[in-house]
Image (cartoon, rainbow, N blue to C red; front, side, top):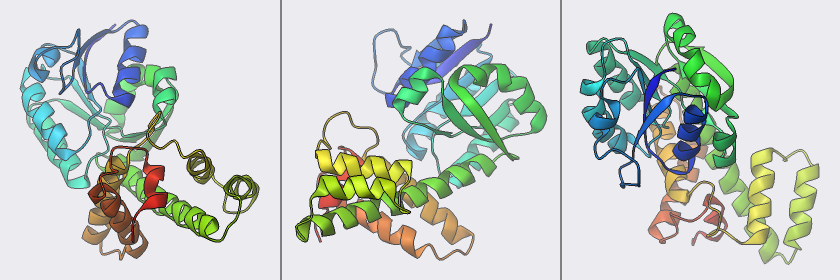
Amino acid sequence: MARIAFLGLGRMGTGMAARLAGAGHEVRTWNRTPKPGTFAAAAEAAQGCDAAFAMLADDDASRAAWESALPALPKGAFVVECSTLSHGRVLELAAQARARELRYIDSPVTGLPDAAAAGKLTLFVGAEKDDLDAARPLLAPISTEIAHFGPVGTGPVYKLLINLMGAVKIAAVGEGMALAQKAGLDLAQVASMLAKGQAASPQAVRAANRIVAGDHDRDVLFTGRLRRKDASYGVALARELGIAARLGETALDAYARLVRAGLGDVDETQIVSVPE
């Protein structure tokens, strides 16, 4: 069994760390906001570990954690970044890891907190094949599928593009449900019919049902603030590649307005009420 540092105990990280511990690994945890049983510094958690995983909010959080943790890891240890970060940040971190003779794997995930707790995440991996093969026993407790897209940097490209598509889709569902409400339609019926039609997807159906329930401030699955962050990273990558991400920019603007309205920390489906 391995000694693993896990950096970030939010909605996703808590379940992922528990899965690794349940598989018999010695898991040493750190969180930006101190929690009982966690190490005070990322460096303390990572000291002498065989691998360090991170599930953090954004680029700034990633820089702060890894700046402390990387020097504490021994040569040959794995650096597994599961956070949704900008493409530039991923490449920066990978270069820093390689400079210290560490094995870097980018592994952003898809799945909600219940999937994290059940070990049923899908991992979008960018890594050298030999590094990924060696790390598979460490990744197995948290995942049911590992999609290897190619070398370092490719996993986050896929994660950013699907999250940007998700931002567009959920903003569109919010707009459609707002239209239905204004027109006097029964929202529960609209959501039910949506689930049966060509516009249906698990994400769209979940968003529509959440809008019907109106419980955006309870059991938050993904906040508007995080969706805005992910969309901003996706739009930035599109611009770097010369893609005119006009739909993405429109969705990004909607989520920016949601955050400015003081609604960034409730569920992202609150987008239905974004003021014009």
